Length: 478
Image 1 (cartoon, rainbow, N blue to C red):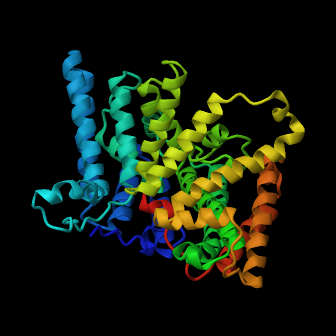
Image 2 (image 1 turned 90 degrees about the vertical axis):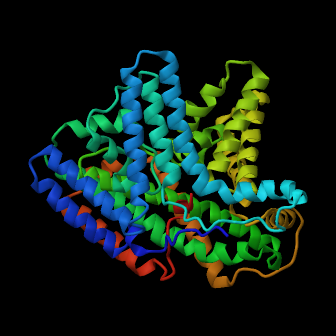
Image 3 (image 1 turned 45 degrees about the horizontal axis):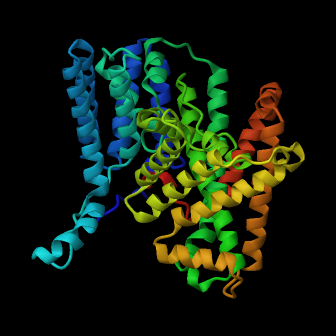
């Protein structure tokens, strides 16, 4: 059967001592060097070491991917033959998607085809392979596809320096779970020798601490509520399942946006920019707005490299709806080899199509109804997360049925309910403050002792409040 990688190893977690040791050594070496080539070489070696701490053998797969598409892109740029350029593009896509498909979807596909070939004399059970899923393969596959496609479209020149391209794919802050980086945004940053900028380091430290608090204090706390309930939903009552679903919505947001904040913060300390990946998605007022605020690097990738090539909104209304649904179904499949992920993508695609197809009365958009629109959008998002989180359709059907039909069952202990309510209130207040206040400006204007004290308090809170059972980031499995 499929073996998932042991992503519990602390060495690949941003909030582990091992990672902080690697970061400090890399940071000191990077800024002590005066040559840009040596600096980039330092980041590359740190990235290789970072990945090798999890699995040294699969580093070679990542390096092969980088080498292959580096030379394919050079070939696409050199040739003037449209047919040969297309052939090289197709070859690159086949290799990249073929590797992703083998590691991520082989056993899923075996499970699909085996009922068909079993009557022809095949064994009763499919021969599932013991495949280790390489960490970050979904993310770096999207990045290398965007690079080759952009070179093919002549939007960017092919990179001349192999080290630059390998660092584009392997830069350790975004290597495992994004943000998905565009080559046109990242590669030009590697050309300029930067001077040490304390304000960038301070900004990076604040972002890293914010991500640490989201992950260790909020997401890991909520995981202790969500995991046992979704492991056996039939034993819990309606109110508990509603609470667990809302808790999971907050957990996955704080877990994934926390990783993104930490990755962006790390990059800032080296003078490099990574794209913003979340922008208060749970304050969105419709389902289309959610996807402009949630996992932004992923949703824009789907738009530019899948939805628009499929035809986008150029083929009329029904073609647009079809393209939306196909894009989101494939986006769901990208998250995992399972029908629950496909159904989650289908659900979101249908919601987006309905949102585009059904014009709402003008009064629905009145400013006074904004809170209602936010709540309705959040509830619709939570329904999708039931499919995303459930282990099977059977579990999802139990959750859905009990969410809509009041059912008795185990409830949250009063102390757990208090912690859950407190976390929800904190996240809500923090989101509203970030929406209506210039937090970044306040931090910049704060006296140095106040800013340093706030950072120290944040680190202390993360240590005190984080549960001992905290584990890998959720998106490591994708």
